[in-house]
Image (tube, rainbow, N blue to C red):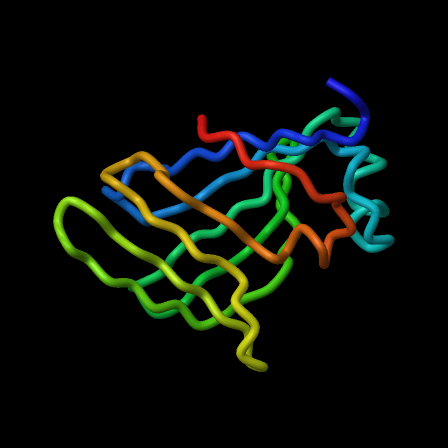
Length: 129
């Protein structure tokens, strides 16, 4: 894999506690200065972008690596459940879509986020874990 990852792994945590969507990306691909300042001292090769849904109305985004977490943003979430599928939309205060995802149980069937641009990660395709 190159230093700038073109593939990102996506994993959904079990819904027993909270629903979370996770993407793994090469740490060197993140170019936002504040995020780089957080990542560099950790000495890690990969970081996770995590979106945790809280009570179906709020989503918290963070970067995680080496047991540490950097909060990125919190935004309004809208969750629609049509068994066996769950569709999630997350929007910023200005109306920008931050996340669109379709989940089936613990599996992400589709997940896309615009936060990669905010973090300075070059475009690519998402790989489901």
